[in-house]
Length: 429
Image 1 (cartoon, one colour):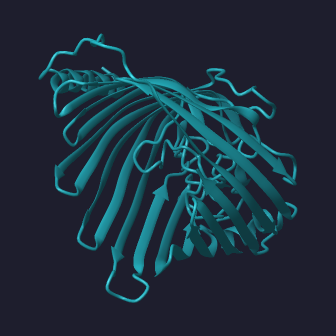
Image 2 (cartoon, rainbow, N blue to C red):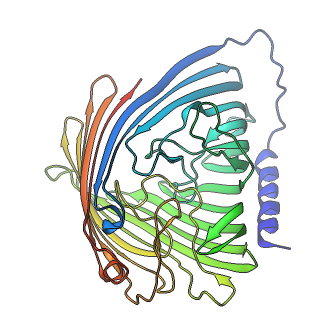
Image 3 (cartoon, rainbow, N blue to C red):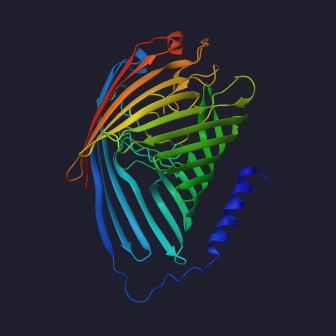
């Protein structure tokens, strides 16, 4: 029996155990159900500018993003319906706007929820339709909120919660983003299945245990294209004790791609300590990550880690790199002067995990081929960000950074310093 089938059977048994305490209540209830509706949402205007992007390999770029995403929610008893249109446009993107920049007018969410209380500690829920999905800390499956266009999914989600324990099962297809109005749709190219368990064995001490099954019918790694079938088995430990907080995750990937066996892995950690009694209430944070790369182009094994659908800002506000064939160490500090102001300073150093593979952006596009370079050090990043929360749901934010080239970049082409700046205004209503 395959590991993924064994895990699915274990998840089914866990559902049966959690639901055994009480039979499902009847959906029919006496008397009419009152329908309540609410309208919320946000509007965001963001500008980003880059000098010497890709360390001088690409032309300078500066563009403007506009996004409006209102949401209408109607509830009646155990049933709720959510409709969330999106208006997303981009101006000035070098080379033309892509799926993360523009979608015109479309639907980012349109789903129905059914939530049934089984007893005073247990709830069962079903969601069907198009929805944004975030699993854990969004290292593998996230909403892609940072770029202009989020990543929705079409399909079915089931959840069962009992006390502090929660099990989420999903079978969805990634929505493919089109450039025009009402042309986003599920072409069933990328499928996602998952069994995701969260538990709290002690107060403020939590863990996630999960399996994620991913299929891409037209995947590409290097010069090879083909069907990718990848299973990710993960354990995430997270929590807080006093001033100390942690979020550590181990991910192992197995599967097949174009006749090659997949053998990949990643380790991601974030540890922070807060000092609330010190002026500016500093939070000191250390992130350290490694995502495997391919160790040999001729061994019929693919060692490249695939983060699938990660959150939009993985290593920082503006960094060009994504979590594939990467090692990074990222100390940072967050300061709180009060009055809704936050200041964040980040430093980061990046290396290649494998000398036989290049480096990639967040979407998986290769930025630099390995060529004959033997160096691992990619470069160093320094970044500062400022955000201000104002009355009536208004937030202003700005960031700036510089990414200097290391020996690997110098050995593979142009090696200028990437200068980055961003500014945004968000109104939540």
